[in-house]
Amino acid sequence: MHLRSGFLVTLSTLALGGCLYGFAGGGLPPSIKTVAVLPFDNQTPEPTLTQEISRAVREAVERRLGLRQSAESQADAVVRGSITRYEPDLPVAYQAGEDREVNVTKRQVQISVNVEILDQKQGKPIWQRNLLVKGDYDPGREADGRRKALEDLVVNIVEGAQSQW
Image (cartoon, rainbow, N blue to C red; front, side):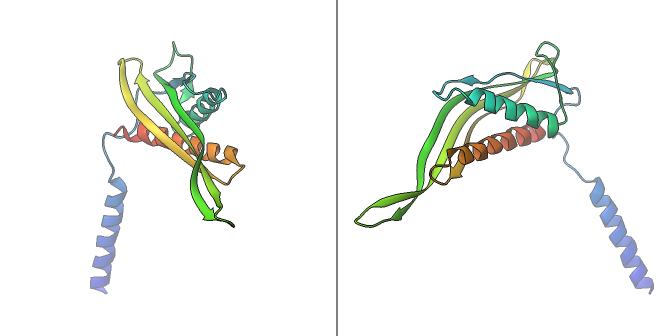
């Protein structure tokens, strides 16, 4: 009985100590409370990408990072970027058909984006990356691949802002 209670005390101490463990240095600086997401420059022939990416990033920094939207002149941080490449129809999976025919069974959207989060007060980048995001889709369903690629982009930006690595 005495051994059992000693074990429970040790286990409780380890469990509580584990709750206090964490990484230092991650996350956005505490002074960053507001953000302006600028329209991304679009160097591709796909005109709607600027609006789609800017909207997805704006929603993500508000919901996932807890930042309030603000005008650029008032914001603590600015997110800006450029869309450098859009490949909507890359074949990635094939299947043999009849008479030596090859059928594409899976396609992929690829989007290359340069992204920067800038601390306006310090005048320094908090985080910046050149990202290549991808989204697989069944033939004829490019919008599905595009949505997956945008989700991947948002995850990369949010995780990058949170870790700053």
